[in-house]
Image 1 (cartoon, helix red, strand yellow):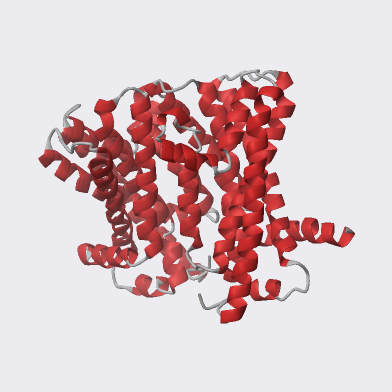
Image 2 (cartoon, rainbow over the protein chains, first blue to last red):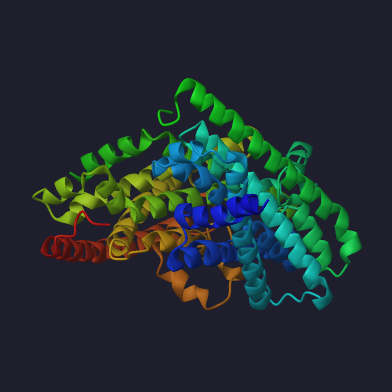
Length: 262
Length: 252
């Protein structure tokens, strides 16, 4: 069991340092801290001008969404950069469980996502003057953590496609854009067509944003419990999907000897 | 030379499935988001503005990421030394690349307008179609020249990618591409006033909606862009000489 934790924990951290493109301080701050903050401000001012919703709606929603950037691209990098750096074959040759190796990689990205979400929420609340009840903070932190973990597994599921397709960055870019649209973070879910609303139910962030908004409004954990559980279930589903896709594509690439030729 | 170079690079960029799909799909998603936001805000009369705004955002993204990485991409392709050996000023060799990124950015504009028309029935009733047909290429040329300044500046910065990733939303916001600059804090006004993106976006929006005189805005956009072109050319010459003297042209 200790070995498994070492494989998942230490292995995940080493892979994070080696494969995440944004680990230098300038890249981290510029891309992961400043970028999401400006995204939040963009939608907050657009929402103010159109009168769609109040500042709380945009600040809390976009702060939860901020976790997705590191997690979605991180998950993609966790698999695709192995191929780019020529080390994918070595990882797949490992006698240890590749499922554990890759699932462990989602954890540092989830931690990263949590840090970004908390920073974005704090900075935006300060800049735009949002007050959040102090009693809501622990549950809000838990919600952001669940959202980040859910996004991490979603990113890993996308990254698994990197074992099969070369242009997986396209999938990541489009996915991040779709999260903006379908999760109800910027357009209230009631304003979206039924199909888009339904798609949003199966994506990370949707339920966490709802839970976080309830908490920020002072409704208490009991009011946020249902969406929080739904977010955890979505995250778990993506973890299973990621594991299944990684196993499937690995077996397929071995069978067709196509690991580095796709 | 500039025209042939821009065409060559535009063709090359258009061969990349990633570039094309990103230029088409992401702006369409943003246009959809804008349409639902404007509908939710009870502004159904501003749908054309939303589609045009989302298209302009796509043009800026293309210029920002394309021009920001123009030198680095040539370095990765192994062609930087060859184009720098050309017996022409370096700015004339790089400008076609940045113009090409702006040109391929117009795919985003075409995609958002077509998407809006076909899916949401947004009528393409431009207030001044002739001015719109001039303002869009004018804005594209202006942004291409601005791109040269970005390309030459970013090559001096070790972490230019961080700046590139950071500059997308602030320029969308401050330039008033979707959010009117009147709702922003007052201190953003002077920043907006010196950006060619602000005036280019304004010219295109005025041509589409008839909310103002197109030509003065387009004129200011091009004037600022020419200033950026001159500054970018000087910077590019400096960067090239420094790289030759230090033998660092091929080094990242």
